[in-house]
Image 1 (cartoon, rainbow, N blue to C red):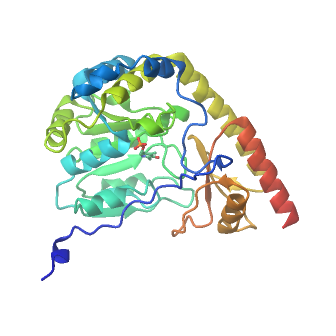
Image 2 (cartoon, rainbow, N blue to C red; image 1 turned 90 degrees about the vertical axis):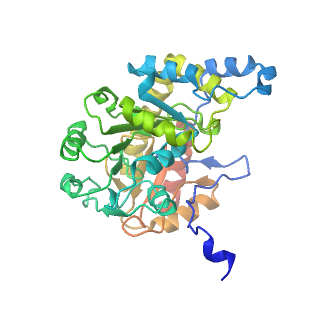
Length: 352
Ligand SMILES: *Cc1c(COP(=O)(O)O)cnc(C)c1O
């Protein structure tokens, strides 16, 4: 008998690289290429360091109220956490405790199976079709819960709200989590349906469209009852996860709506330009409604392109995984960054 027999062994999630050098064009982790809102910078300058002496507000009321106002829901219908990763992990722990497997797509956010493993939750993946679409029927089998991103990652493919409504109606005994990490880039949010479906939970993040990945802010919107259960588990784990600066700056981000709309609009325009250019270079991809494009080239293996780009100080994301090992996920950066990427690819394909 060794202490090692009592270790909870897990294979951790692997995040995209955060390179040390400054001269890298970083298109590998779907961060926002623009700085946070001016309102956030102002709030940062005005932070009262004396207040760091005290524990933060464990209910993060200021942020919760700002979100409730913005999304037209009740404060009791909101849960905030340290990035949506924290919110999702807490939700897996809270809602997925049955014997039946939880369901999620075979190609999706690669943290879901990690959380299922660490919390000992049985799971089953449902294969996307050849065009990376969700097959709704797959989610009508007996299950212990459902989690699907919309748009999906890393495919960027958006599904209709109506499909999710059908899944919700057919699964009244399961909590259905819709991970809307990328919904601001052209999707329709399910938040207006909170109140209609008791088993729906929508999760969003400040890491992509709100340019605050470094602050770690995410939130869930759901029926009051779900939020109460989620809070019970969270407050049994660590009451003070949201620090005071994070609460203040995230609130300022919500209040600076004009800037938010401006940068999201810019990213969408740059995405559409990038799609045209990639198409011109022979790449193919499903229509992305996120801040990245998931592209494949008919002649050049993705792994080779990934290495060549990396050697040229352009970082994108590549997974050596079944079904997606010939794809690159390219985050939408600034216009200039995308011009550099397109030029690099054009030259590489020509000279190869
Ligand atoms: C980026 C991402 C998250 C996590 O975001 P954080 O708020 O930074 O933890 C969750 N789900 C999906 C699908 C993502 O792409």
